[in-house]
Structure formats: structure tokens, C-alpha cells
Amino acid sequence: MSFLIRLLLTAAALWLATALVPGITLFGDSLWGEILSLVVAALVFTVVNTFVKPVVMAIGCALYVLTLGLFGLVVNALMFWLTGWVSEQFEMGFAVDGFWAAFWGAIIVWVAMWVMDLLMPRRQEVGR
Image (tube, rainbow, N blue to C red; front, side, top):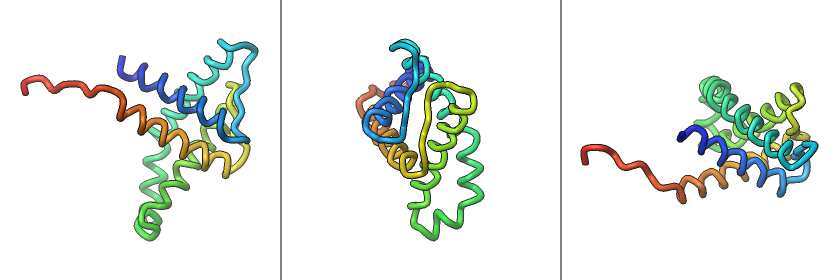
């Protein structure tokens, strides 16, 4: 259940990025088509961040140290851009046009997810 809620929150954050950043586009025949596109894009985004991002982070470890962590912004933008590219290749209804759109979209999604994490109630640990 937690994964489903997180997926829907990611879809909402992606929608916010499409609304605020020119160059991030959402396609759909209807409202339900756009919602489905957002959920599928959120799933792709989750898969990319789960499997590809750790590899890129490990390879670019020295760049993280040299830039005091700012390279993380570039990695997040690249993961966002990769999500858009994969979505375009499979005609999922989500597109990202260029690095800067991906950069700002990734920042918006990160901030939105951070705010949603603050607002979500934490699960109580058993036995305390």
C-alpha cells in the first residue's frame, strides 16, 4: 500500500512539473489518459531512480566530492531526462525537451516530494 501511495504522490509531483516547466509535456486523449500517463511516468521514474541512479552515483563519486554534492543536481536532472526519453520511446505520454527542462523539473519534483514527505504521517514503530 505504501508503494502505491508513493507512486501516486510521484505522479502528482510530475504533474506539478508539467504545469510549471515549459518543455515538460504530458499527452493524453482525455483526463484519464493523462492520469494514466502520469502514473506510468511515475513508475518509470521510480524504476530509473531505483536501478540507474545508484550506478551513476557510484561512477561519479569523485564528482560528488569535488562539487560538494552539487553534482547530485545534474544526476537528478539526467534521471528525469532519462524518464522522459524512455516515456517517449514507448509512447507513454510524457516528454522532456532538453537538459534545462529536466533540471528544473527534477528540482520541482524533489521539492514537491520533500513537502509531501513532511505532510505524510510517519508509521509508528511496534514495541516502543
